[in-house]
Image (cartoon, rainbow, N blue to C red; front, side):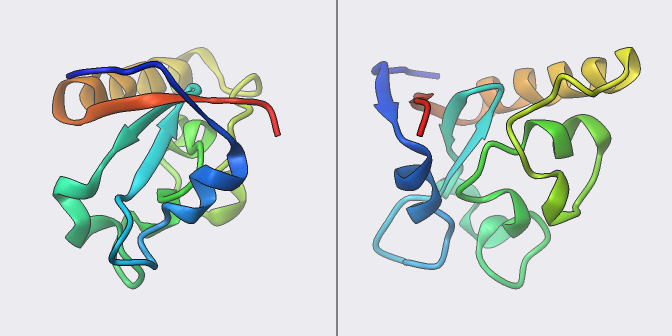
Length: 106
């Protein structure tokens, strides 16, 4: 999908967590921010993937975890098998959703 190389702060990413219907829903994987709004029904509060919305969920995706404490950008602790899982999720998001930009340091 398309990219416009926009830099998004962690605070700005957090605003796009599906709680404000006027804003698109963003999710980051390995620092790349995706607009997952086309699947809004999966990422809004009360739905299965809301835990990922507004965050870089790399570690959680690699671990196949829905735990909020795993929804962090640091994926350095993943095993080789979990890295393979994370890479598959990244490929999935790249195919299915538009890239909005990249997450900057806070």
